[in-house]
Image 1: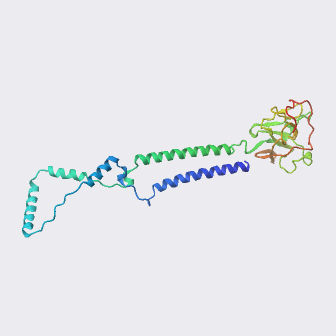
Image 2 (image 1 turned 90 degrees about the horizontal axis):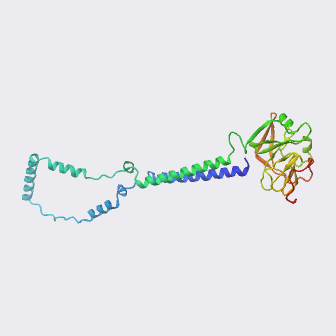
Image 3 (image 1 turned 30 degrees about the vertical axis):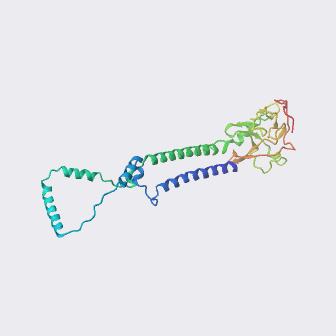
Length: 304
């Protein structure tokens, strides 16, 4: 994976974590013990609160206090004794009425006892939906940028044994037949070790075991460049750019040589590092001869 892709992945992860963190902090603050608990009255309807205020605004008549005399005390004691004796003889209806009054008492409940009201439910549901949307989009975005764990473009790909590849890309008559590797999007072609020193690729890590891996994409506008067996080179049908079999620029509007991947010899096997793309300017001194036969396409665009 290139540095730019790594930066994009890192920034995407930071943004995703930041958004989720902000959501979690907001949710925690709404449920924080330090915040004053919402009163049970906030869960009542507007009509109920209005009725309570009307009841509180009703004036209460208070009789003026009268002077207490000894006679009044005796009368009060006598009435209390009489009332106590009368209670035992009365029916249970007043008791039931008293119990009914006691049931009407209103007790203030804590937020935990009251549970979640409708507004809180919809707020949390909306937050959960938004968080799930961000999570799914973040995962799909990272999955698009990150190379597949099982291998694929953007990762290191084992394309085969070097000895087998050397005999496969160079035929008995000496002609070249590149091996196309779909998962690497690359052509594996021969590159003689003796030619490295007089090429512009010396020390760039693009040749291993006498082989190099060329990116299939034309550097002009991104078309896939097919192999022309007759001319022994790559010729783009879109605008006529041409390259020799080691990917050096030969003709057309292409601004540089074909891009190539870093390669490595690991225990006799060719590893193509598709996450590392090497670019190079148009070659002024060609490493191999081109063309070696008739071209497969006409040159549609003048050389620039």
